Length: 431
Image 1 (cartoon, rainbow, N blue to C red):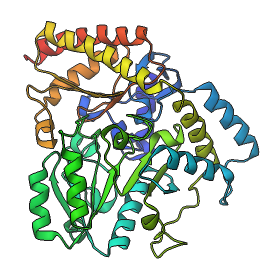
Image 2 (image 1 turned 120 degrees about the vertical axis):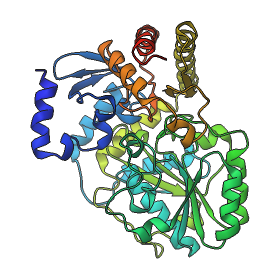
Image 3 (image 1 turned 135 degrees about the vertical axis):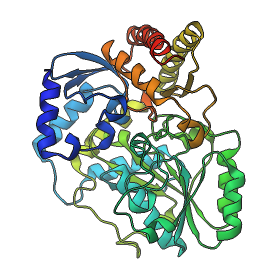
């Protein structure tokens, strides 16, 4: 028995399901999770000593690769000063200023500890600011495990086949209206009925939690026009896309400014962090300046702030996002050629350094088309890629992430493994 299997067996005695997040479970791919010992650059190493090219990247934040020397050095220096004070530090202001300077729609930002906390807080702020109660979210978009958001969510909810969650009061769920992603006409119909009740529309501008799905031409622009028309706040959940698709996030890439933005992942350089920010007049509604209460002892933790500052400094260097785009193009070209040669119904979807391989014979534009993917075929594919030394998210409905440390050699090795895996899928799944 491998060390990972032994550790998983032990973990299940003390941790529900043996994991501290369902996304880490390998149930959807009919396997047991690997236990990871360390990471370096584009690689992770499991407890059995096997090396993998990593496209999970801690679910996004490792855009610089694992254990970047500059980030590690900065953390070591801060750790000698202290890990947490529950009091203000200048590090919080430095990182906040970097976020404000990097994202044009943000005048002020509040640091929290996770993406879930950021989205929950942003929605409370939207309700407090507008005096309205209802929220519109997009089917298949995942915004963390807050009660009002576990309605037709993507990510682990899709993987586990759960429509919502036990423990969420029906009255809470009733305050959330779900419409299809990329469907403006459906949104317009909702506003005809609830125009005076909707505090905010929240979405991933580029989805990552039903797999990578891009907005259709004009979709985000139309969202912006409609929400302005009805006095509703537009919230972009850029927990994944912020500082990844561009330094200013998806809103810079698509040139659409929301009222509020949630951040996570990268702005903590891999440490636990989240943030929400937006227009000054809205953000001034947060306590202690305004009536909307939100607090957290570990918010603005000096270690997370230090890692985030170091990461953003490196991402500001010239050519970083062009480099990531070139790596993405190289990987895409190789995989598309494999798809052609193997002649298999697969859709490769990529925006910048985020991508998903959908085992689907049709284009994926929303949650319903994503759910049409062949999860059995993905399971075969995932396990063959793992056997070949490629570590992918253990779900058909997740984004994969490329880092700056994925070299041409790693990408070529991935393409070679992909070819073998697609052949195996075609044979075993009879595609």
